[in-house]
Length: 251
Ligand code: PEP
Image 1 (cartoon, protein in one colour):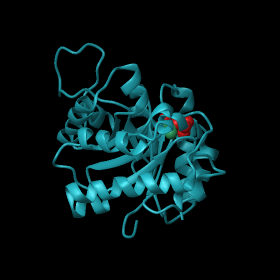
Image 2 (tube, protein in one colour):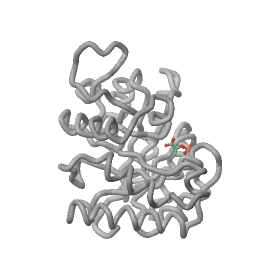
Image 3 (spheres, rainbow, N blue to C red):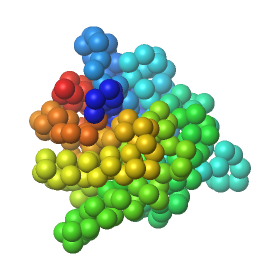
Image 4 (spheres, helix red, strand yellow):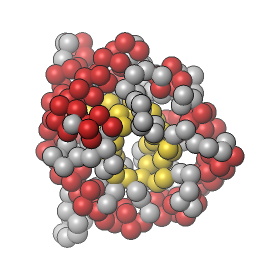
C-alpha cells in the first residue's frame, strides 16, 4: 500500500526456550547487516521469552511481541498475562484472536475486541487475526466470515498506529496450502474497503498482513499483491535464515 511501511512478523507459537535466543541474535545480526530496512520486523515469542528476546534484540531493528493477553490489567486470573505485563517485559505488540486461540480457548470476536482494547490501554500494538476455515471457504463464506470477524473484533478507536490486521485463512496455517494470488487479493481488497468505510484515513493506512504457509519460496509473490503489507509467519519464523529470507522478499 503506498506510503505504508510493510511489516514481517514472526509467530513462534508455543516454541522456544533460552536455547532459541541464538536465532533472535542471528536475526538481529542479519537485519542489521542488510542496512536500510524496507520493512519493519517483529518476533512474537512465548511470554516466557519476551524479556530475554527483547534484551537480545536491543530495540533497534527487531521488535518483540507477545501472542495473547488478558483483557484486564491485573487481578485474580491465575496463569494469565496482561498487556501491561507484556509491555513491561519488552513487548511492543501482541497478537490477538489468532485462530488457534479462537479454537483452543473459545475466543469470540467480543473477547478479541476486549483484548485489542487492552493492548492499546497498555500502549502496545494489537495484531488482530481474522480468516475463514476450510469448510467456510468451500461453502463460499470466506468474505462473509472475514467481514464479520473484522466488524466484531476491532474496537472503535482503531488507528493505523495501534493496529495491524492479519488475514490468516485457517486452512492455510501450518498446512503448506496457500490461497491463489487472486483469492488473497480479493480478501485483502475487501478488508481494505471495510477498514476504510469504518475508519476513513486510518483504515486506508492500516497494515494488512497475509499469514498462512508463507515461506521464503512464496513470500515475494505474496508480498507483491495489492493491499498485502507484509506477512505473519509461523513455522518459517523459527529459523533465522528462513525468517531473514522472508524479510528480504519484501518489495
Ligand atoms: C500463524 O500461525 O500465524 C502462521 C501463519 O503459521 P504458518 O506460517 O506456520 O502457516
